[in-house]
Image 1: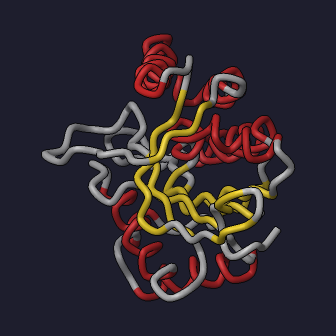
Image 2 (image 1 turned 135 degrees about the vertical axis):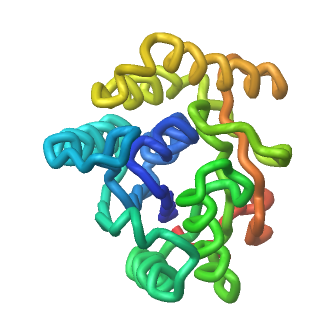
Length: 225
């Protein structure tokens, strides 16, 4: 199976679904992280070229830890909104990768870039045989008036250590400190408790394509391996 994980920024995928990425890869599936933007500005909007290079290298290292392929689009953050050309870029990558499942941001995420990527992905997958799933907003996201209502949970008890290791790679984000890592673990423990395991990640399915086989329901695109 070929799994495409689309993220607006470096570290989005790792924090939201790093355990699931590692679990897919460990099971022998091909996983690709497609990252739109490498953030390189401070809170005042000042561009820091050195920070961009550091964040890029961190993203590469994190993907390697999780066992995923990586492509960084390096799009202009000031041109990141729901646009036809971004849809075309994502559509081309999804087709080239022959995706069975695409994971993307939650469409009510508090970050405008995340929402733009989610909406573009909806268009990419509207008329094809690709399952589409939204991952939960990462723990350093803001508060929104909407509730994330997960209907898919994945047990990551055996890959939680890899998720945390990929998060620790982002030394450029070290100002978030130990509380950041505790929060990541806390969310995974909370989601795990909801389904009776130690750690889990939660998702909201938009479209799940399946087939029926002798061994049961095959939850991906019509038997593609």
